[in-house]
Length: 153
Image (cartoon, rainbow, N blue to C red; front, side, top):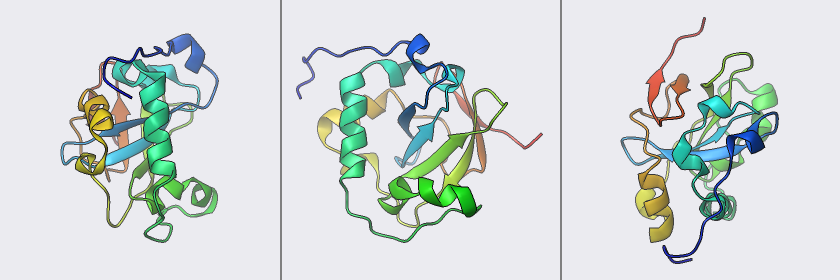
């Protein structure tokens, strides 16, 4: 897919009340999958810019070989959310009843980086680089793409 290909923009209305996964890079170039769980407020605008590139990144991660065992610190329910982690991506899930707050579900021991991605996906994630380091227990993410570490209430 070239950069000139048309892109379908995803609207916030489409996200409300449904599971929506999006991706971002951190300052070190690591990649994370975020599960918004129907909360559109904690999804950066840049994540909505191209349904096609979002899907392409999802497929790229889903088709990578698993390189490590599950690493979900909380275990239990979180174990079924580890496939991206087993392929080298961090995994965050939205905290129920806390808009825009995500908790770390699984952390890869050997994460891949943006440099491992094809060029068109590197360009896509360039606009989705959060000023954070993945591996933090909780992050608050804004629609403007800001991110900050947050403590449990």
